[in-house]
Each structure stands twice: as C-alpha cells, then as structure tokens.
Amino acid sequence: MLAYDPMDRIPRCAFVIFGVTGDLAARKLLPALYALHRSGRIHEEAVIVGYARSDLDDDALRERLGAALREHVDDFDARSWTDLEARIHFVRGEYDGPDGYERLAAKLDELGPGDHIYYTSTPPETYESIVHGLASAGLPRGEGGFRRLVIEKPFGHDLASARSLNATLLDHFDESQVFRIDHYLAKETAQNLAVLRFGNAFFEPVWSSRYIDHVQITMAEQIGIEGRGDFYESSGVVRDVFQNHLLQLLALVAMEPPASFSDANAVRDEKVKVLRALSCLSPENAVLAQYVGSEGVLGYQQEEGVARDSRTPTYAAAAFELRTWRWAGVPFYVRSGKRLEAKVSEIVLVFKTPPHDPFDGVKPLAGDRLVLRLVPDEGISLRFNAKIPGQAMDVGRVSLDFAYRGHFERPVPDAYETLLFDILAGDATLFMRADEVEAQWSAVAPLLELGDAPPATYPAGSLGPAEANALLERVGRRWHRPGSD
Ligand code: BG6
Image (cartoon, rainbow, N blue to C red; front, top):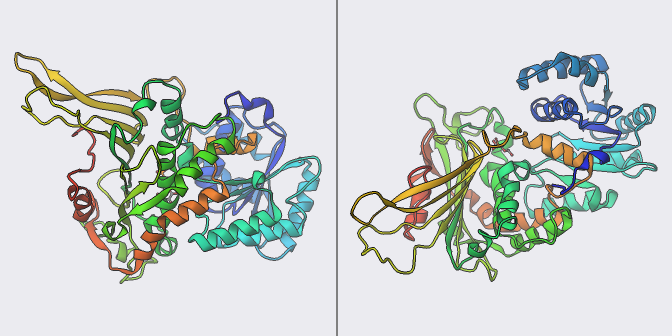
C-alpha cells in the first residue's frame, strides 16, 4: 500500500515456491505472477524456482504450470507465457533434512539473482522444517541481496503454536524479512477502508460509539470445504477465517489513524492496539454450528475426510467488544459459515437512531447503515432515511451506492496479485506482524474453548442457524440483509 509508484523498486529476484505442485500455486500464485509479468511488473531477469518432493524436471514443471494457468486465467496469452515459462526452474527435495536445501542453494547460485523470496505454499506442519532447512543452507541471510520469507495461513493452531512458530522464524529471520499472508487485507474494499476513513473529513467524526450502535462483519460462503476434509476437521471456521480474515477486517474498521500508510509498522502498531483491546463478549452466547445435507447437497459429516460424528463447526457467530475510548459499548458482531445461501462478505456499520423523532413516529426511524461490500461486487452503500414523495411526511429507505466495477477503468486485481507485488516491492503493510497474529489467537481463544460442545445445525444452502438470529434479536437487533434494511 505504498503511497508512491514502487515500480523502480521491482527487484531482479528469485521467487522460490515451496510446494509448487500444490493447489495454491496452481490456482493463485502462478496466475498472480503471470498477471504481474504481463503488466510488466516483474523484472525481466527474475526467475521462479519451484520446489517439491515430486520427481519432476524443469520441462515437466513448466508443462504442468502451463496447463494450470490455461485452466485458471481467462485471458491466457501464449506469447507472454513462453517468455515467463523459460524462467521457471525445478528443484526436487524433501521439506525436512538438509539435502534439498543444499541443491536449492546451488541452483540459486547458478541462476544468479541475489534477492530471494521463499514462499511456503505447503501444509502448515512443514513451515518449521522449511525454515530450519533454509537456515541449514545459509539461505536466510545473504550478501548482495534481500531474503524474504512468505508464510501462508494458517499461522499456528492456537496461541501456543503461533508463538512457537514465531520463535522459530525469528531465530533465523528478522521480523522485517517475514511476510505473513492474509489475503483479505489485499481486497480493494479492505484497503479502501483506510481511504474512506482517513482520506475524507466526512466519515471519521461519526466513526465512534457516539454515533455507531454496532458493527456487523459477515463472511458467508456458498461453497463447502472443497475436498479439504482433513484440513477442515483440524481447523473449523474459527481457526480458518475468524482468527485471521475477520479480525483483520475488524481491526481496519476500529483502528486509530496511523501517521502514514506508507509505513507498515505505523499501520500495524495501530491494528495491534485494537487486537489487544479486543475480547469475546459473552462467549457462552456465541453460536457454533455445522451444516447438514439438504436438497441433494451433502452434509458436513458426509464429506470425505470428515468424521461421521464430527463436532467441527462450519459456522460461527459471536459478539466482540473493544475496551477503548472510541468503541466502549459498541458490539462487533462477527459471523461466517460454509454452504450458506450466497457468497457475501461485508462490513456494516449500523448508526444510532436520531435522539428525537420530529415526524411524530408515524414509522419508527431506522438507523443509517454504511455497508462496505467485499463480495459480490466490491463497493460501498450508504442507506439512510428520505421522504417519500407525497403530501404526507412519510419516511422510506434510500441508498447511495458506489461499485468498483464500472466506476474505474482498471479492473479490480486479484488479492494475490496485490500481495505478490507488495512482497516484491518489500512493502509489508498488508501482512501480519508476529504480535498481531498472537493477539488474534488470544481474542478467539474463548471460542476455541467452546469447541467440544455439539454444534447447532443448519441446512446446506440456508441463511445459517436460527441461533445466530437469536444472538442479535435478544438485544433488539438483527443481521443486515442486502437491500432490506
Ligand atoms: C481461505 C479459507 O482463507 O479463504 C477458505 O481457508 C475460504 O476456507 C477462503 O473459502 C475464502 O476466500 P475468498 O477470497 O474467496 O473470500
């Protein structure tokens, strides 16, 4: 999120992908590198080094990645792929033990670029081995170039494991070399929160408990667990998206203005203050639920890799509170689930109703709502009360809408394109610092402790469990439904 054009800082680097034969590399990393290459944002002498346990060679890897790219990008262009493909190399190796890393170091020497990026696109249990392996080959530090380590989510399984992973990373790398991924931070609406709040004089004065009744953060998904039964069984919704994506969005809504958005640490200092002041409000009222089969869609317990008596929650709704001057008394309601009616990710600020109704209460005045939409159709809507034409002083709801699509000429980039560009440019603003990750684990710990109780249920394809509605109705509120409030 640099305030200047960082093109002049794009390095002639080696981009090493551990787990290059996996799904993330095929679906996200390669398409993002390809998009950067096509728009001239990768140095023409940069190289990509794929590392995996499979028995491949350069040609076999190129062929495999070419096929994946054709499948995952809409505007495949054979000429630019030929150019990028020639710069892809393969190193075979295990994740533990030094041999593969020695071969990697030799390959990197042979290829030349002194700047290295190491990306862990592998299962989380390999992260520590990869760091030890890199260290055994002397790769974390190098003369004549930077060394950056990119760690995918999940970052740990709980507070203790996240601390231990941070300790291992920081034994060998400096915090300034580590880029912990949370792709939600690279969504345009998430970044735009900063501009909306701190680039306008209009919103910030009402952005507090004085005018805001409560905040809702929703990440609803239509998809299920997409064949990742084993992973999801050990994760569940709280670890998968609450601890990271949803709390990062919450931090962006609640943070104080940093001195500069070009200073990654200034931004992260403000976010970490929020995360440290955050706690779960009445965890006993939080809702954990699991989808059951409906209309031909399998229930969670029938998915491959899932225990038939699994208690892993695929849905959660919980209230958080912030012990700060600005936010005391304003609940932040957060919810997310798999196999819901539609894919919707949004942040809704619900404003208080006016202190006095001068229209004789013909119809109760609803609180204004500012809706920041991440999915579908990134954009912002402000819903407020207006007079309905006619002789009576009748009040109805209207909406001011801004949509990214159609407004700017440029397309909205995929989050991974933005993240990889920032890693190349050395800008860590959109990445989580060690202390943020740990504060996030502390904040969700009470929800993880609820884990053993049997979850509530909801039918696949529904709006979620009735218990989630009760969470808000109990205090006279209700969840936002697009277009209805
Ligand atoms: C990932 C989660 O981090 O985010 C997935 O592991 C989830 O379970 C995905 O489906 C959602 O990302 P997006 O960008 O499609 O909203």
